[in-house]
Image (tube, rainbow, N blue to C red; front, side):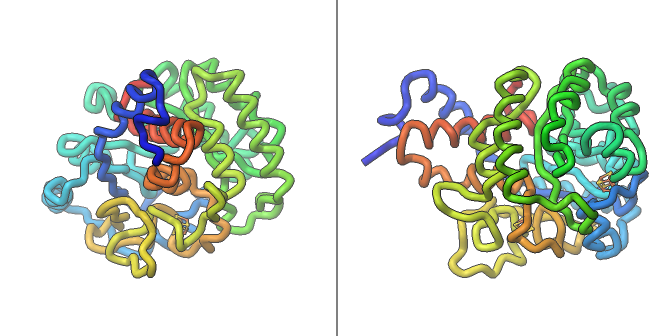
Length: 332
Ligand code: SF4
Ligand code: SF4
């Protein structure tokens, strides 16, 4: 029978041991229902999650809630919205209590005196022209000024079908401001014309993602196995979708049989009572879901399936390391 020890040499085994002890218990929090942008295809607004609950305005309630989340065992708070930086007091309440990660569009700078080591993921939807079409402005022009050279910030580059063949110039812009980048794919939740994926585009994109990873290994936080899984929607012969997704809120998870899932995972709305179905759009058709974090988590909860060959297990380790770096659980 294959075991972790029998499949890995000394170096890989050390890498395995480093991540095996992490014991991640994450949950996701809508810090606010508001945003200073309105991107076409934003899952939050397109699924009406911004009106699913009324925002709690009392900071004391937030503090009590976060204390309770900590008692519940959460050791990684992923702050999204809306735009979390519109409510810095809430972000601070999380940061003081639980290791926290803040997803932002980067238009407002997180004060590094207050949040010296909070990992910040800055959303980016392509080159300047695509950003203008989808988000109304070239956010990079502002976010890159706010975060150039910041050791605890990286770009979360959402690739659209129109970006295929054009990724490298975007990566170069990021290299030039001394930041790192993680790639993910747009799920076209609002059906914007020309932004839905075709099989051939996904095939080309996979090759292109591999190429930029080879060329910019210090800048991309990625792995070829992740590229394979996110572009094909397949992992070890299984297909991603509702019956496989690990990122479903525990209280709403009535699937039978129960797939392997993130332990005690909840996505909380900003009233601190309502929960959303999963880590992304409540109304998305799961068969079209390209959510990067859900795909990464799918791989991560499937360790046993990867203890089948050295290559499969190394693939699993690389994806786990990638996740751990993105959330500042291990160094770059
Ligand atoms: S910046 Fe983020 S939360 Fe705001 S509209 Fe765009 S995708 Fe949605
Ligand atoms: S939309 Fe995506 S993340 Fe949400 S339950 Fe479906 S597959 Fe999972």
